[in-house]
Length: 392
Image: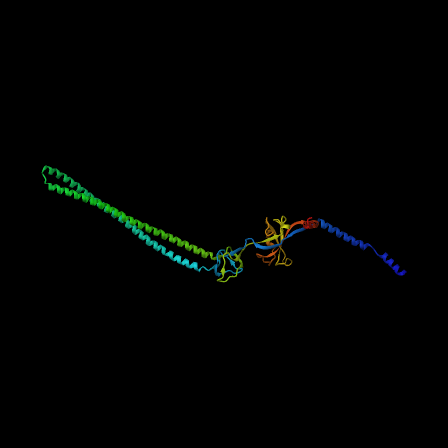
């Protein structure tokens, strides 16, 4: 038993504590370095978005039907480039086109009818002027005859007076006086007849002129009615052409058809139905949505960010650099919206960016020490536990 015990004592004497002390020294140095890093090192604090996608600066324009109807033809195809104002499809407008043909035919007949009515009006106005001149001449002739009869009546009465004085003197027979008196009465009756004839001519002329004027006014009314009919036909044609235009769906802007409804000729299109979406050409931006509890008041304009696309793993394609431009002042669907400007120089070669690509945005908020981050995490947990503790 003495020999094994002696070897044990020698092993214990040979055992040296220096390697153990060296290990403890290395551990102490590492612990000190970690404490220094934990208390003084600065690490970036980022806020990760709940959702993000690439969008064009100019919003996508939906294309919808302004009225319902059966589809006549369509040139829409997914990915096709279109120009502003280009007709993409048209509904069935044959009924309106036929009505336009009918109204145009009626409209072409109106000028001829109007020209005939105007010619008749001009002829009637000329006849009225001639009738008025003829009536004035007849009245003047009647006045002249009446004047002549008045002169003869005056002469007959004067002759009658002279004969009456001579009959009283016995120089002339009484029969001559009677003959002169009869002549004076005849001249008086003739004068009265001529005056009546003058009045008759005047009244007849006024009646004929009034009839002509009435016919003239009637023709003018017909011309006005024809003008109104022409204006109505023009308005009707314009309204039908507007209906045909409403049946055409045009591209609102220059761009590319990003979404197209599947339609065949004869298919029914409802009023307001969205038929396509036109993506205008232009620059892209990043739109991100954050949880308001952690992002509100922390994400601000001017902060740098990193964009990780879902379809392009960052380990292979890298990430895109961006900068926050605007942050919404109100929540929408319980999310905080932020718009970021994409750094085109950070796009890797061969990576094609397009509208609608989804991903995640990491916004650099600040620089903080690990100790600060630890205390923040502990504080959040304490606040959470306090808020969830049942009240007594």
